[in-house]
Image (cartoon, rainbow, N blue to C red; front, side, top):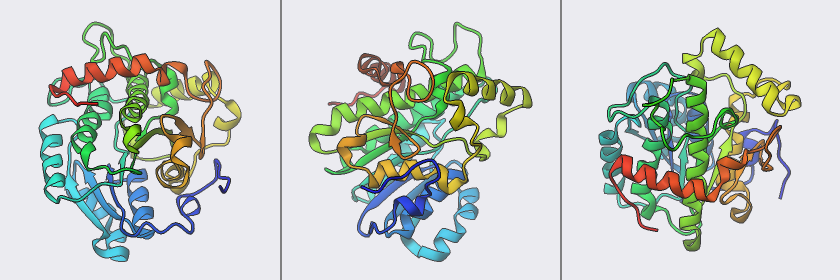
Length: 315
Protein backbone atom coordinates (compact mmCIF):
# COMPACT_ATOMS: atom_id res chain seq x y z
CA UNK A 1 0.00 0.00 0.00
CA UNK A 2 1.30 3.44 -0.92
CA UNK A 3 2.44 5.60 1.95
CA UNK A 4 0.56 8.84 2.49
CA UNK A 5 0.87 11.53 5.14
CA UNK A 6 0.27 15.10 6.23
CA UNK A 7 0.89 16.60 2.78
CA UNK A 8 -1.16 14.09 0.77
CA UNK A 9 -4.13 15.38 -1.23
CA UNK A 10 -7.44 13.83 -2.22
CA UNK A 11 -6.35 13.10 -5.79
CA UNK A 12 -3.14 11.53 -4.57
CA UNK A 13 -4.84 9.08 -2.20
CA UNK A 14 -7.36 8.16 -4.92
CA UNK A 15 -4.86 7.95 -7.76
CA UNK A 16 -5.55 4.96 -9.98
CA UNK A 17 -8.80 4.07 -8.19
CA UNK A 18 -11.97 3.73 -10.27
CA UNK A 19 -15.17 4.27 -8.26
CA UNK A 20 -17.57 3.81 -11.16
CA UNK A 21 -20.68 2.00 -9.96
CA UNK A 22 -20.19 3.05 -6.33
CA UNK A 23 -22.54 5.43 -4.55
CA UNK A 24 -21.59 7.82 -1.76
CA UNK A 25 -23.44 10.09 0.66
CA UNK A 26 -21.51 13.16 1.86
CA UNK A 27 -23.00 15.59 4.37
CA UNK A 28 -22.12 19.28 4.30
CA UNK A 29 -21.42 20.00 0.63
CA UNK A 30 -22.00 23.75 0.75
CA UNK A 31 -18.36 24.64 1.53
CA UNK A 32 -14.87 23.42 2.37
CA UNK A 33 -14.10 19.77 2.97
CA UNK A 34 -17.52 18.51 1.95
CA UNK A 35 -17.31 20.09 -1.49
CA UNK A 36 -13.79 18.77 -2.07
CA UNK A 37 -14.75 15.28 -0.85
CA UNK A 38 -17.71 15.20 -3.24
CA UNK A 39 -15.57 16.51 -6.12
CA UNK A 40 -12.85 13.92 -5.64
CA UNK A 41 -15.33 11.05 -5.42
CA UNK A 42 -17.18 12.20 -8.55
CA UNK A 43 -13.89 12.72 -10.39
CA UNK A 44 -13.07 9.07 -9.81
CA UNK A 45 -16.43 7.85 -11.08
CA UNK A 46 -18.64 7.65 -7.99
CA UNK A 47 -22.25 8.77 -7.87
CA UNK A 48 -22.48 11.26 -4.99
CA UNK A 49 -25.44 12.45 -2.97
CA UNK A 50 -24.50 15.64 -1.20
CA UNK A 51 -26.52 17.11 1.63
CA UNK A 52 -26.72 20.67 2.88
CA UNK A 53 -28.92 22.82 5.08
CA UNK A 54 -28.89 25.59 2.48
CA UNK A 55 -29.45 24.04 -0.94
CA UNK A 56 -28.94 27.29 -2.84
CA UNK A 57 -25.53 27.75 -1.24
CA UNK A 58 -24.67 24.12 -2.02
CA UNK A 59 -25.69 24.50 -5.66
CA UNK A 60 -23.39 27.48 -6.01
CA UNK A 61 -20.52 25.75 -4.20
CA UNK A 62 -20.77 22.63 -6.35
CA UNK A 63 -21.31 24.23 -9.76
CA UNK A 64 -17.84 23.15 -10.87
CA UNK A 65 -18.57 19.53 -9.93
CA UNK A 66 -21.81 19.41 -11.88
CA UNK A 67 -20.19 21.20 -14.85
CA UNK A 68 -17.39 18.62 -14.92
CA UNK A 69 -19.23 15.42 -14.01
CA UNK A 70 -22.87 16.08 -14.77
CA UNK A 71 -25.38 13.91 -12.97
CA UNK A 72 -22.78 12.17 -10.78
CA UNK A 73 -23.74 14.71 -8.08
CA UNK A 74 -27.23 15.23 -6.69
CA UNK A 75 -28.27 17.34 -3.70
CA UNK A 76 -30.65 16.68 -0.81
CA UNK A 77 -31.76 19.25 1.76
CA UNK A 78 -30.73 18.26 5.27
CA UNK A 79 -30.59 20.27 8.47
CA UNK A 80 -28.77 18.13 11.02
CA UNK A 81 -30.09 20.39 13.79
CA UNK A 82 -33.62 19.14 13.13
CA UNK A 83 -34.58 15.50 13.63
CA UNK A 84 -37.63 16.05 11.43
CA UNK A 85 -35.33 17.23 8.62
CA UNK A 86 -33.08 14.20 9.14
CA UNK A 87 -36.04 11.85 8.91
CA UNK A 88 -37.35 13.59 5.77
CA UNK A 89 -33.93 13.36 4.11
CA UNK A 90 -33.58 9.67 4.88
CA UNK A 91 -37.00 8.99 3.36
CA UNK A 92 -35.96 10.76 0.15
CA UNK A 93 -32.72 8.82 -0.03
CA UNK A 94 -34.41 5.51 0.75
CA UNK A 95 -37.05 6.14 -1.93
CA UNK A 96 -34.43 5.67 -4.65
CA UNK A 97 -34.01 2.04 -3.58
CA UNK A 98 -30.27 2.27 -4.23
CA UNK A 99 -27.43 1.18 -1.96
CA UNK A 100 -24.90 3.48 -0.30
CA UNK A 101 -21.36 2.16 -0.55
CA UNK A 102 -19.88 5.09 1.37
CA UNK A 103 -21.37 7.38 3.99
CA UNK A 104 -19.23 10.33 5.02
CA UNK A 105 -20.43 12.35 8.02
CA UNK A 106 -18.59 15.55 7.14
CA UNK A 107 -20.95 18.36 8.16
CA UNK A 108 -20.60 20.13 11.47
CA UNK A 109 -20.37 23.31 13.51
CA UNK A 110 -17.58 24.50 15.80
CA UNK A 111 -17.40 26.59 18.96
CA UNK A 112 -20.83 28.11 18.49
CA UNK A 113 -22.40 30.51 20.98
CA UNK A 114 -24.75 28.70 23.35
CA UNK A 115 -27.88 27.60 21.57
CA UNK A 116 -30.22 24.69 21.10
CA UNK A 117 -31.36 22.71 18.08
CA UNK A 118 -34.96 22.51 16.97
CA UNK A 119 -35.39 19.56 19.34
CA UNK A 120 -33.75 21.25 22.32
CA UNK A 121 -30.27 19.70 22.20
CA UNK A 122 -27.10 21.77 22.71
CA UNK A 123 -26.19 23.00 19.23
CA UNK A 124 -22.84 21.26 18.76
CA UNK A 125 -23.79 17.92 20.31
CA UNK A 126 -27.15 17.93 18.54
CA UNK A 127 -25.80 18.89 15.11
CA UNK A 128 -22.44 17.13 15.02
CA UNK A 129 -23.44 13.90 16.74
CA UNK A 130 -27.18 13.32 17.15
CA UNK A 131 -28.11 14.45 13.64
CA UNK A 132 -25.56 12.10 12.11
CA UNK A 133 -26.42 9.32 14.56
CA UNK A 134 -30.03 9.32 13.39
CA UNK A 135 -29.17 9.83 9.71
CA UNK A 136 -26.66 7.00 9.45
CA UNK A 137 -28.67 4.52 11.48
CA UNK A 138 -31.80 5.12 9.42
CA UNK A 139 -29.75 4.39 6.29
CA UNK A 140 -27.59 1.58 7.68
CA UNK A 141 -29.43 -1.24 5.90
CA UNK A 142 -28.63 0.42 2.55
CA UNK A 143 -24.90 0.00 3.19
CA UNK A 144 -23.77 -3.33 1.66
CA UNK A 145 -20.92 -5.59 2.64
CA UNK A 146 -17.60 -3.81 1.96
CA UNK A 147 -19.33 -0.49 2.56
CA UNK A 148 -17.78 2.08 4.88
CA UNK A 149 -18.82 4.92 7.16
CA UNK A 150 -16.41 7.75 7.97
CA UNK A 151 -17.19 10.24 10.73
CA UNK A 152 -15.21 13.45 10.92
CA UNK A 153 -13.96 13.92 14.45
CA UNK A 154 -11.17 16.37 15.26
CA UNK A 155 -8.08 17.01 17.33
CA UNK A 156 -10.66 19.01 19.27
CA UNK A 157 -11.73 15.77 20.95
CA UNK A 158 -8.61 16.25 23.08
CA UNK A 159 -10.15 19.38 24.62
CA UNK A 160 -12.81 17.44 26.52
CA UNK A 161 -14.42 14.08 27.03
CA UNK A 162 -18.18 13.93 26.52
CA UNK A 163 -20.15 14.37 29.74
CA UNK A 164 -22.72 11.62 29.28
CA UNK A 165 -24.63 12.78 32.36
CA UNK A 166 -25.12 16.27 30.90
CA UNK A 167 -24.40 16.31 27.14
CA UNK A 168 -26.76 19.24 26.57
CA UNK A 169 -25.32 21.58 29.23
CA UNK A 170 -28.47 21.66 31.30
CA UNK A 171 -26.65 21.53 34.65
CA UNK A 172 -23.22 23.10 34.02
CA UNK A 173 -21.85 26.35 32.60
CA UNK A 174 -21.53 26.38 28.83
CA UNK A 175 -18.08 26.63 27.27
CA UNK A 176 -17.99 26.56 23.44
CA UNK A 177 -14.61 24.79 23.28
CA UNK A 178 -15.55 22.17 25.87
CA UNK A 179 -18.82 21.59 24.03
CA UNK A 180 -16.95 21.20 20.75
CA UNK A 181 -14.53 18.74 22.34
CA UNK A 182 -17.38 16.65 23.70
CA UNK A 183 -19.18 16.61 20.35
CA UNK A 184 -16.02 15.51 18.51
CA UNK A 185 -15.45 12.81 21.12
CA UNK A 186 -19.01 11.67 20.43
CA UNK A 187 -18.25 11.44 16.71
CA UNK A 188 -15.34 9.11 17.42
CA UNK A 189 -17.30 6.98 19.89
CA UNK A 190 -20.17 6.64 17.43
CA UNK A 191 -17.84 5.39 14.69
CA UNK A 192 -16.30 2.92 17.14
CA UNK A 193 -19.67 1.46 18.17
CA UNK A 194 -21.13 1.48 14.65
CA UNK A 195 -18.13 -0.53 13.51
CA UNK A 196 -18.59 -3.04 16.33
CA UNK A 197 -22.24 -3.52 15.42
CA UNK A 198 -21.80 -3.89 11.66
CA UNK A 199 -18.38 -5.40 11.00
CA UNK A 200 -19.73 -8.96 11.06
CA UNK A 201 -21.67 -8.17 7.88
CA UNK A 202 -18.66 -6.51 6.27
CA UNK A 203 -19.49 -2.85 6.94
CA UNK A 204 -16.75 -0.88 8.67
CA UNK A 205 -16.60 2.58 10.25
CA UNK A 206 -13.76 4.92 11.15
CA UNK A 207 -13.29 8.35 12.69
CA UNK A 208 -10.88 10.86 11.18
CA UNK A 209 -9.17 14.09 12.14
CA UNK A 210 -8.76 16.08 8.91
CA UNK A 211 -6.11 18.42 10.28
CA UNK A 212 -6.14 22.17 10.74
CA UNK A 213 -7.77 23.82 7.72
CA UNK A 214 -9.07 27.35 7.20
CA UNK A 215 -12.73 26.79 6.26
CA UNK A 216 -16.13 28.23 7.16
CA UNK A 217 -16.20 25.89 10.15
CA UNK A 218 -14.41 28.60 12.14
CA UNK A 219 -16.98 31.31 11.38
CA UNK A 220 -18.13 31.47 15.02
CA UNK A 221 -14.60 31.77 16.40
CA UNK A 222 -13.65 35.02 18.12
CA UNK A 223 -10.00 36.03 18.44
CA UNK A 224 -10.18 35.02 22.10
CA UNK A 225 -11.51 31.56 21.25
CA UNK A 226 -8.90 31.12 18.53
CA UNK A 227 -6.13 31.99 20.99
CA UNK A 228 -7.53 29.61 23.62
CA UNK A 229 -7.91 26.76 21.16
CA UNK A 230 -4.44 27.29 19.71
CA UNK A 231 -2.91 27.23 23.18
CA UNK A 232 -4.78 24.01 24.00
CA UNK A 233 -3.53 22.34 20.82
CA UNK A 234 0.05 23.39 21.52
CA UNK A 235 0.00 22.12 25.11
CA UNK A 236 -2.03 18.95 24.66
CA UNK A 237 -1.04 17.64 21.24
CA UNK A 238 1.99 17.16 19.01
CA UNK A 239 3.57 20.60 18.74
CA UNK A 240 5.68 19.62 15.76
CA UNK A 241 2.51 18.86 13.81
CA UNK A 242 0.75 22.01 15.02
CA UNK A 243 3.70 24.15 13.97
CA UNK A 244 3.41 22.94 10.39
CA UNK A 245 0.45 25.28 9.99
CA UNK A 246 -2.78 24.80 8.09
CA UNK A 247 -3.48 22.22 5.44
CA UNK A 248 -5.07 23.06 2.10
CA UNK A 249 -8.63 21.85 1.62
CA UNK A 250 -7.52 18.97 -0.68
CA UNK A 251 -5.00 17.94 1.99
CA UNK A 252 -7.66 18.24 4.69
CA UNK A 253 -10.08 15.94 2.86
CA UNK A 254 -7.38 13.36 2.05
CA UNK A 255 -7.59 11.40 5.31
CA UNK A 256 -11.37 11.09 4.89
CA UNK A 257 -10.96 9.49 1.48
CA UNK A 258 -7.98 7.42 2.54
CA UNK A 259 -10.10 5.88 5.31
CA UNK A 260 -13.18 5.57 3.11
CA UNK A 261 -11.61 4.07 0.01
CA UNK A 262 -7.86 3.50 -0.02
CA UNK A 263 -6.87 1.92 3.28
CA UNK A 264 -7.67 -1.74 4.02
CA UNK A 265 -10.95 -2.09 5.91
CA UNK A 266 -9.41 -4.12 8.72
CA UNK A 267 -6.76 -1.46 9.23
CA UNK A 268 -9.13 1.46 9.74
CA UNK A 269 -12.31 -0.21 10.99
CA UNK A 270 -13.10 0.96 14.52
CA UNK A 271 -10.07 3.25 14.54
CA UNK A 272 -9.27 6.96 14.65
CA UNK A 273 -7.18 8.20 11.75
CA UNK A 274 -5.14 11.34 11.07
CA UNK A 275 -2.68 12.38 8.35
CA UNK A 276 -3.59 9.26 6.33
CA UNK A 277 -2.62 6.77 9.02
CA UNK A 278 -4.17 5.17 12.08
CA UNK A 279 -3.42 7.28 15.14
CA UNK A 280 -1.91 5.88 18.29
CA UNK A 281 -3.97 5.87 21.49
CA UNK A 282 -2.25 8.28 23.87
CA UNK A 283 -3.11 10.10 27.09
CA UNK A 284 -1.16 13.17 25.97
CA UNK A 285 0.66 14.45 22.92
CA UNK A 286 -0.29 13.31 19.43
CA UNK A 287 -2.94 10.67 18.83
CA UNK A 288 -6.41 9.82 20.04
CA UNK A 289 -7.38 10.00 23.69
CA UNK A 290 -8.40 6.69 25.34
CA UNK A 291 -11.85 7.99 26.25
CA UNK A 292 -12.67 8.57 22.57
CA UNK A 293 -12.19 4.90 21.67
CA UNK A 294 -13.48 3.35 24.88
CA UNK A 295 -15.87 0.50 24.09
CA UNK A 296 -18.01 0.85 27.21
CA UNK A 297 -18.40 4.60 26.76
CA UNK A 298 -19.29 4.02 23.12
CA UNK A 299 -22.09 1.65 24.12
CA UNK A 300 -23.37 4.09 26.75
CA UNK A 301 -23.38 6.95 24.24
CA UNK A 302 -25.29 4.79 21.76
CA UNK A 303 -27.96 3.98 24.35
CA UNK A 304 -28.21 7.63 25.43
CA UNK A 305 -28.46 8.75 21.80
CA UNK A 306 -31.29 6.31 21.12
CA UNK A 307 -33.16 7.77 24.07
CA UNK A 308 -32.64 11.33 22.88
CA UNK A 309 -33.75 10.72 19.27
CA UNK A 310 -36.56 8.36 20.39
CA UNK A 311 -35.53 5.55 18.05
CA UNK A 312 -33.76 2.26 18.68
CA UNK A 313 -31.56 0.40 16.24
CA UNK A 314 -30.94 -3.31 16.39
CA UNK A 315 -27.45 -4.80 16.35
